[in-house]
Image (cartoon, rainbow over all chains, first blue to last red; front, side, top):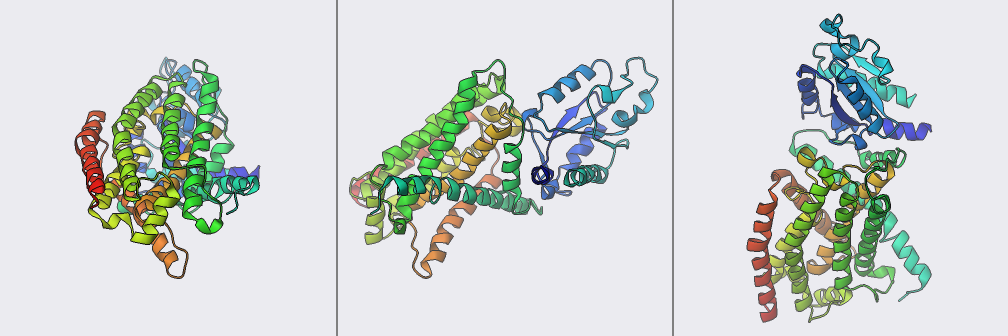
Length: 139
Length: 315
């Protein structure tokens, strides 16, 4: 099992799930995938279909409208799948914490492996988060 | 010439077939990604990247879509892999004659047929997955097949005519070893260039990745595939990186030699073709399907036809 997890750690294909974000985190994710940061060095690749994904990058605050859809996307992905929550909204509901339509318990919707706080987080912070995930996989 | 069942199984499973082509194909897939990265001023993935990708896909969950045709969805990638292995074996045992397996059962027509089987399997697999984008991609694959097939057949015909009207690959190779490479003549040179562009379309590489457009219809026919089935698709696409350039080398560049510095020359032929294809891939944006049809039917097919006429005239 350890051998397989090391293979998995070297080939994480990410899928971008945008759950009602303000779009800043999404722009930072696009920055992350540009030649300057070159995450293909670590085998990270952006894929367009959730069926090919190993990591879901979730942005935005979980409200009652989007939570069932995020759950559905999570169920459509082939297991093993990991979830990285990008941005303060996803990590700690940010300025929307007193809003009426917030889902208070995010972990009840989908299990989240790594949180990346920041509004928006820098691409370096996201690389660090994925590196942590790789570290967990390598044991 | 050894042609027993044991040698055939060895040829199909190990040496020019599944194992050799698979390993070399994944290595060339890495070369593709590395050269692309260097073109874009990046560092690019490590050497073992494509092996990691393949083994990772083997261990993922396979999801079979509820509203698709399940049997076809599963069979299509396996048949595609099988036909790729057969193309690689047939071309390989002709190119590597020192292996000593006689190619008595597969001529150029069989190879053209097997290449069409691969495209048909992409179409069937895409249509069986019950997804709108997949069926869009399958439809585009049909149009692309209609576009490039005639030009490719004419290209093969040039080699056939120049070898004295024979469809046997080993006879084509023997003629070239006696009289020099076909690419040295005007008809051969035109046919080689057209053939290179046809391979680009057969492997659905940019600028002809119309059926798999990642940003537009999210990998088209492969969209609903996950886990090992996706891995088999990726493996057979990687194996095409070996089988089709080998076919072009057998048809126009006089095959491989293994004596002395001939090995370097053989390597240069293969790597040269692959790098030219990678550079075409990196410097051209995706074209529309009507542009592709226009390009193949109005430019490349007449060119290939001209090459055929020149070949008949003996130029």
